[in-house]
Length: 145
Image: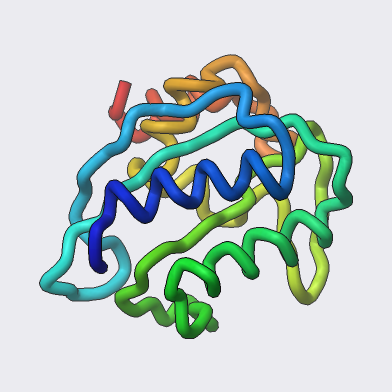
């Protein structure tokens, strides 16, 4: 919702300033909403970040950025709604994390073309630590590259 490109650019800038150096950034992809009906379209991108922060600290910082950019509530139980921004942590090196607050790799990333297309642009050879397939292979499985 809102000025999608400006919001996404602001999020990338804030990630760079507060979390770590943005070392790669995909193109911005205009897509249909996934998982619910909406009058709005999505704008999706992926970025690679070098950081020294812990996974939960990264989560805290991304949630603060979302809130600052106008996000009111988080999705829960796979019930989604319109929002100004949604920052997902997809991968952190080869870590496997399953906690109440954070699951890494993102549990649905391999099923979502709007995630894999921009991610494959910047991290095609990165291997999903649970599925043991590269991002490029996962993207090809969805026939998006």
